Amino acid sequence: MIALAHASYPWRRMVTARPDPELAAILGGDEAAFEELFKRYHGPLLRLATSYLGDRESAEDAVQETWLTCLKSIDRFQGRSSFKTWLFGILVNVARSRRRQRSRLLPFASLFGRDDSDSRRPAVDPDRFQADGRWTSAPDSWTDVPEDKLLGRETQAMVLVAIQALPAKQREVILLRDVAGWSAEETRTFLSISDANQRVRLHRARAAVRAALEEYLK
Amino acid sequence: MTCREVVELMTDYLEGALSPADRDRFEQHLAGCEGCTAYLAELRKTLRVLGGLREVPIPGHLRRRLLAAFGDWRTSSRVTGGPDREQ
Figure (cartoon, each protein chain N blue to C red):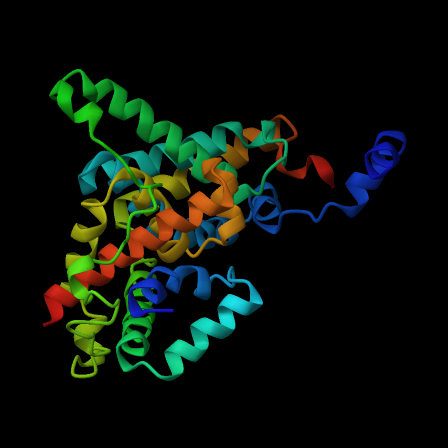
């Protein structure tokens, strides 16, 4: 019924579709608005690029190419997704093609790393629980950890290492959800995965990062 | 629910993905369990640490390069009727 209405009155979609303010900012040609956008997305783009490419320099390079590609093709952008999703899609393509170029130089085995991110195995170490399912050694809320230590640079560096050590599927999800601040829906659509898999990957990734933090903070 | 089960539901809980019945049981467990309450507190702190990774300052060279590219794009789009074409 609704689809039929749209087919008969194509203008309805144009009237009801919310214009993407980020796209409008770029198309408007306002330099300050553009700078605001690349400031906003620099961190998330860089983190994601680093997760694919490993080192900071290649990642920065990929982010630069992403923006250049964005400017080159923005006139052809159809607005079927949000500007943000489109931009991150460019980054993933840039990073993947660089990895392909590089993979000729990498050991073959690295292409076949096992990734059981979607398995329902427990995410928390089973040794933490007694036979009856209660804690053997209960967590302590990190009440003794000062805020500036918890949110400091050293802790951040350690967490980045922990993220990099995750299987790729979990890494993408935790970077988009918890670092970039995307919604579950945006993330699942972007990665073309089910809602349940999005949540399982997020859960495993968060549990692993929490465990790394616990080890680091104790 | 045991602690072992509760920790595996933490993300579903935070995502609002538990059924009302499971959420009640989850919260009942939490109310009487220091260990799981502490785990949830740690998880929330973990999320704050992760959120702290969002902002990264842009290196000067990259900023200059992108602003220059934007300027070029704007000029060439004006010529071909780009940015202002809607107006």
